[in-house]
Length: 129
Image (cartoon, rainbow, N blue to C red; front, side, top):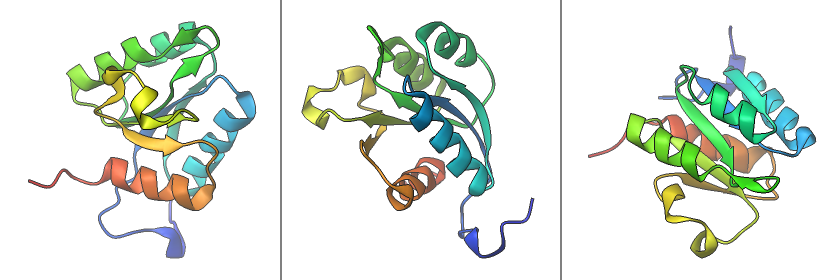
């Protein structure tokens, strides 16, 4: 679908998995991704749905570290092994996040649209050698 002035050079329209246990944050991320021209897998707001949706085909993911009493560490490991880029949405500082998330871009909570847009853009940028 046409994006008008929102399209950025080098940014591909992608399918992105959204995982966050706070429904309003998950829905907001989904709406923002749609506004940017991307399609959304999910959002998953609990661990069981996150694991199930993580097996689907998508280009990138945005993972909340904590889903209630569970963490998304196993999903991050699986995405890394599949070579799927992901961002880590967290209110924790980078040093306190499990090493499994090291391959992800940090999306610090709370975040606004511009920070979110920049992280999504970086997430979908081709790797530079």
